Length: 262
Image (cartoon, rainbow, N blue to C red; front, side, top):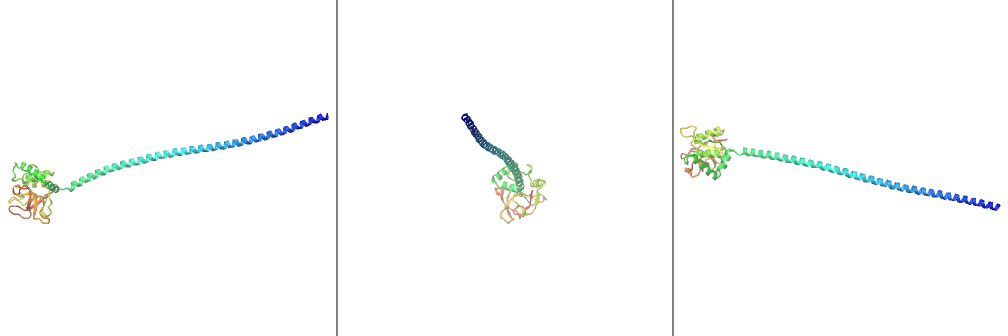
């Protein structure tokens, strides 16, 4: 009996020890598993956090790109608008400047070219002298005698000076010009090429010059005796352009008295 009892006690003791050992292992296993789970959860958490940071960085970069793109588009629009406005204003300014310059130049040209300069330039061309003489002879009923006033009148009309077609005498020519505010000047030294000149009066007829001609320049610079003139004395000189003594009367050629100028 005692022997069986001892065996029973020993068995219970062994079972208790095994149970304790088994419980300890279980606790250790649970603890180890818990630690492993915690490590695993921590690693996954770190990975998640890292992924979230990367995603945030990507979103921030994307937003920065979008903002930069919008800024560049706006800047391009502003620059384009400035360039277009500048170009438009420049073109408009250029047009206004060009128009003003053209008008100013035309006005200056009109002011700078005097009547006598136009007349001289016109008569300096032989073709003009020839055609004007033909018209003057036609107005004088086909004769070369006494054609001077017709010739001078035609020269003036060809240079936009409104001399009536029926003007046929020197006195009429003086009246026509003075009525258009042409001024008389008796200073021989003030003559300019293209001036309309008149001689002394016909004997016994005060205020009636005996002859008229266009002054075409002095024969010698600095000397006021002989000059080139243009008139209708083609029968005497075979040319409407010839030299004449202006300072004295010689051989029935009356000297210079005055000129008329606008």
